[in-house]
Amino acid sequence: MLMPKKQKYRKSHKGRRRTKSQATRGTTVSFGDFGLKTLEHRWITARQIETVRRTLTRVFKKRGKIWIRIFPNKPVTAKSSEIPMGGGKGAVDHYVVAVKPGMILFEVTGIDKESAQKAFKAASYKLPVKTKFVSKDNI
Image 1: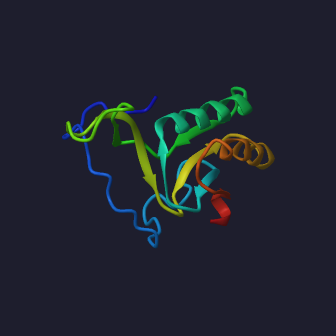
Image 2: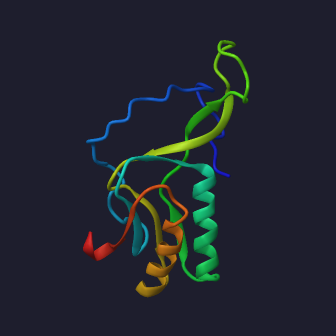
């Protein structure tokens, strides 16, 4: 699964969820012909990204090329169950990426529009966000 090789700090704060902001970077289809765009704020885990990647490759069957435009670089900590309060922050459990509305999550090229729509529909079921199919010409 995706995770950073090296980080300046091992653990990070949760951060504030800004619900009104839109993405300003990564909002256009840059590499491929078709993309999957998010419509809401959420954390997407490395495990979910890997599941979508496997779904897309299974649908394409060695055709086309896939770009993953997001990377999980935020560590999420968790303490084991039934541990009393105190004792510091828990160990790093998994990594997430915070996505905003308008961000392009995945891009594909080398396949027709119907196959891309079918693949992204199957992939969108694996994600915790509402998504939209976009193409390079109708952003």
